[in-house]
Length: 84
Image 1 (tube, rainbow, N blue to C red):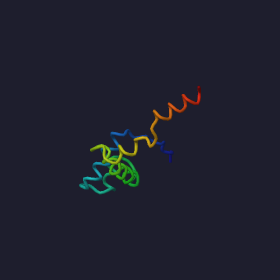
Image 2: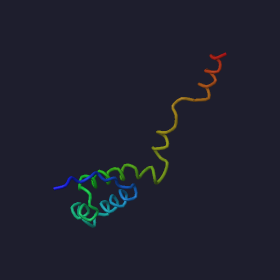
Image 3: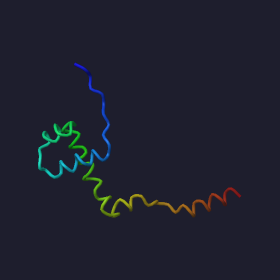
Image 4: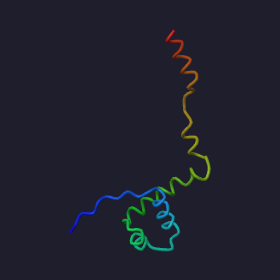
């Protein structure tokens, strides 16, 4: 019996599998056999897709997390003052 090498899936392939899992037309076992991936991996990709879907549709909460908490211009001005 030969050892199977680790494969990496493209993001497009992961999204395709996750969308098929969300649609629910086939069971996880059927999808695993169809796409040749493990059932647990399909569940993980499905969860990642559901968590990240809000960022795709609109800015919402994801945009507020990326805004800096500190005003950089004032910090740079202080650094300039201290350097002088």
